[in-house]
Image (cartoon, rainbow, N blue to C red):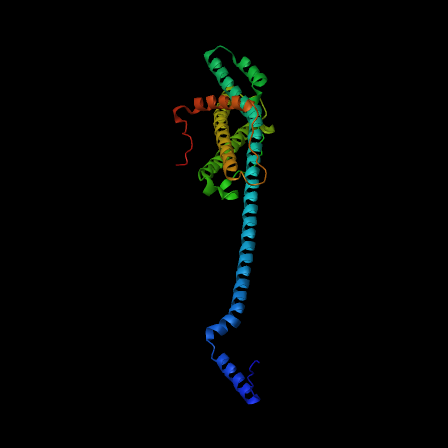
Length: 289
């Protein structure tokens, strides 16, 4: 037979009171683990998630900004090469149709003047040949329209990539202005000699002065055209190199200058004339150092 323990109501109440007393004296850290720690961990997890998502968004936006900037720079570089290509093509036409004929005819006319002084031809033959064979000497040349190539103003980010391009940009501007100035001076002298008020047969001394002035201008035209070709092609090649190396992963146009086949022969011809004109005074190649 199993023994039974009988607890009356007063004893049961005392037992419950003892259990409550033990619970009230439980350590503080246990209360923290049970109640506060889950809330703290949940808050920390929420904060970490928010920071991660914000960083991810910022990084994505930064990549987009960088990509758009590089795409814009690539478009600007390709656009500049397009402008240079236009200028090279325009100059080729001007040189072939205006500058070289003006140069060769001026030199031939100077030779004819020497023949006149030497007595190998008379004044009548001189005047006849002047007006029949050497018209390009007195032919006006319309100033060519050239696209503005100013890298320091339009493409300042190139300073970090290749500072020498800013120097070459200055040479492009300088030679362009010099060439246009020479053509304007040619036209001014021709206008002065052929306006309606003075449109009469010029005497030999006056013709000599006109031919000598035009020959001097033709020298300047050739030298400046050659130097302008040099710096334009150098700038174009440098820009093409930058596009190839620093924008290879960027989506966008990759334009470069491709002169016609006859450009090489034209440059050889211009170089021979320019160096013959300048002689020992031929300037050194521009240097970035």
